[in-house]
Length: 223
Image 1 (cartoon, helix red, strand yellow):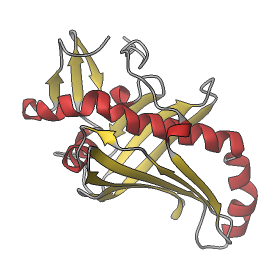
Image 2 (cartoon, rainbow, N blue to C red; image 1 turned 60 degrees about the vertical axis):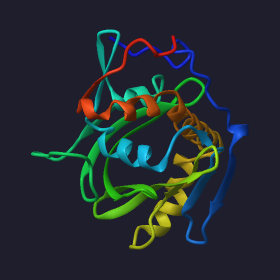
Image 3 (tube, rainbow, N blue to C red; image 1 turned 90 degrees about the vertical axis):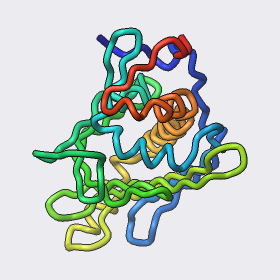
Image 4 (tube, rainbow, N blue to C red; image 1 turned 60 degrees about the horizontal axis):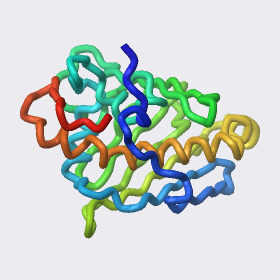
């Protein structure tokens, strides 16, 4: 069964204009996308650090149906997030890997299917890294801290290769093709909506975290 959309949950989705965004191209050709989000009301750094530790394996039961936590984060755009390491146990930690699939854009015309490594997870930040053929091709980082009224969050995505003989080819030819202006804007909007959606479910899940890896959340889900 497909998870209801954010609209069906009656969750307001943030617009790109609500965040401050910065696009930079480094001298070596790598591109950097930064999103400085408005305050996420009612959410704390402790909640987000817990969330990123469990969001690849946590299940949520809503009105009898069980869904992955990652799907709840962006019901329209997120397809799956799975632990990629054999024999894993407990929350995610640096060094662990996850496999993900998501789509975004006005017609969901852009897609991302990748296996990434956790490089940071603490109460100040979370980081993912995509590595291909031994080369880091993308780094995604979240920085967060408690602030008056909620949580202050910034996101930074760096795409491209920092070193190696393929650096010029990848950064100057492939990166501009893969991340044109429309895709850049679509990804930023997707990220703004992800972070904004925390206010709709994260406090409720965190309050119920003692239930373990399957949380029942019924009755107070807005639909």
